[in-house]
Length: 632
Image 1 (cartoon, rainbow, N blue to C red):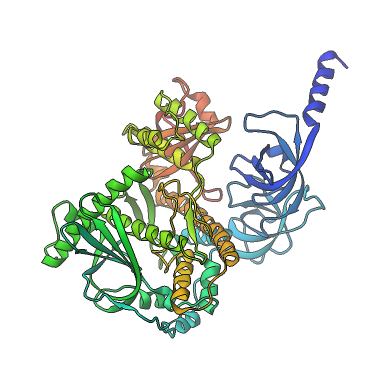
Image 2: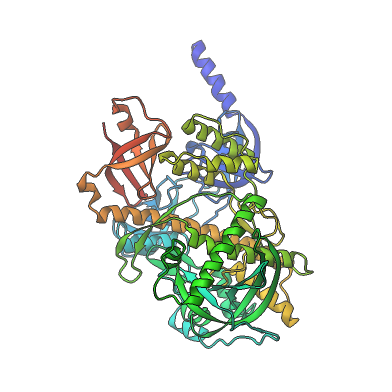
C-alpha cells in the first residue's frame, strides 16, 4: 500500500470516528440531507448517504463523526427510535416501487402486497412497514388506500389532503345535528343593536365572524367596536362539536378544497349576517383622535345588527375617492371615520411598537370546489382596506390579551420568538450578495425596519423579502404571554376568528366560563391545546403551500405553457451542484434549472440575484416541480 493510500485510509478512519451519540428529531430537506435537532438544542447535519432509512419527523439516534461541514457537526443515523408517521402518500412508479409526494423524502419505497386496484401512475397511501430492528434496510410499505390519478387536479388535491391528514368534510348527519344547537344563556348581554356595525370581507366570503363600528365619543376620542361572532355560546367545552373542532384545529383552505373547523350550516347560523340580530362578543376601544392611541378598552357579550355587508374592493374604491353610488350617508361617514382612525392607529403602532412591515404579495390559484377546474390566478396585495380591518382586529386581540394576562385564570397567547442569530447572519450574507451592501445589525428592530423599507423596488425585492421570512421562526401558541417579534408586542392573543381557529374559540370559552362562574380550563390543559394547535397550524400551512404549488403547475398546463414557448422572467435564488433554483415572480412559484444547462451557458455563470429568462421544459406532478431551461 502506497503512502497516499495509507494517508487516505487514515483520513477515512479519522472521519468515521464517533465523537458522541445524540438523540433528537430529524428534519429533512429536498436535497436528501437533513438535520437532527437534539434534546440539548444542537443541530447535527446528516448527509443523504447517512440517513439509513430515517424520514422527516422521526426520533433518531445519531452518531457525530469527525467529518467537517459548514452546516455544522456531521453525523449519521444509527437507530430510529420512533417513526414520526405511519403513512406516506406516493405515486406508483411500477408494481413494486413508489415515489413519495413529500419532496423532502428523496428515497423511493418498495411496495409489498396487493395494490388494491391502483395502477402505475396513481397516487396511493402506503402504510410504512418495519424493516429491520434499526430500520436500515430499504423503505417498504403496503397499499392502505388507492387514491386517484397523479397529474390530475382531483388526484393531486386528494393526495395532498391525505399526505397532510386534512380532516374529512362533515357528514350530512353531523351538519343536521349541528343546526339543532342553541346558544347558552349569558346574563348581562349588552344591547348594541343601535350601533352602525358593518362587515368587510373578501367578495366570496361565506362566513362573517367579525364586524366593526365607530362613534364619535367627543372631540377628542372615537369609540371603535370590534364585534366577534359569539361561537362559544353554541360550542361548549367538552361537547361533541368542541372535540371535533379541537381535532381539526383550524379551517383548512387549499385551492379547490375547503374543510371547515365547524359544520357549514352552523357557521352560517352563527355568522354576523347583515340585517338580522346576532350574538357577539364585543371589544369597545377608546381611540384618541390626536394620535391614534388606544386609551381604553371594554369587553362585553352583546347583541348587534350588521347594517351593511361590504367587501375589500368597494372599501378600497371609497378610500380612493370613488364610493359606490349605492352607499347611503351614514355608511359613507362610518367608513370615512374608520379610515382616518385606523390610519392614525397604524402610524402610532409603527412608531411605538416598530412592527415589521413586509410587502408580501400572495399569488394563489382559483379552483372551483365543485368541478375542480382551474379558473385562473389571483394576485393579492395588502391595501388600505385590508389594513383598516387589520388594525381593528390587532387592537382587539391586544386588548383581550392584556386583560386576560392580569386575571387569575389561564389564557392562550400568540407568540413569535425573535430570529436566531445564526439565521439572521445567513440571511445577511445572502442579502449582501444581492444588494452589494451589508444590511446592518438586523437584530436591532430599527435597523431591520430601515433595511426592509429601503429595499430596491426591482426583481430582487421579492426574493429578499421571501428569504427574510424564511429566516424568521414560526409563530405559535402558548399558555404564557411572550414576545410577538413580528408585531413588536409582548402580550397578544388570537380572539377575532373563533369560527375558523380553535385557539380563538378556547379563549372565548374561558371568558364565557368566567362570566357564568363555571369550570375553567386549567393551565395544563391549555398547554396541551397550545402545542396541538401549533402543530395543526403548521400542517395546514404545509398542505396549502404544497397544493398551491401543484395547482400553479396545473395552471401552466391549462395555458399550454409547454407548447407555447413563452419566456418567463425569473430571479436566481440558489445554485448548487444539481442546478439552479429560480423565483418566477409572475406566478409566485419556484422553478428548477438542471446543472446541464448551466454548463452550456455561453455568458458568465449566473449568480444569486441575477435576472434571467427561462423556457418551461417539463412539469413533474409526482415531485411537484417545474423544470426550466435558460435562454442562451
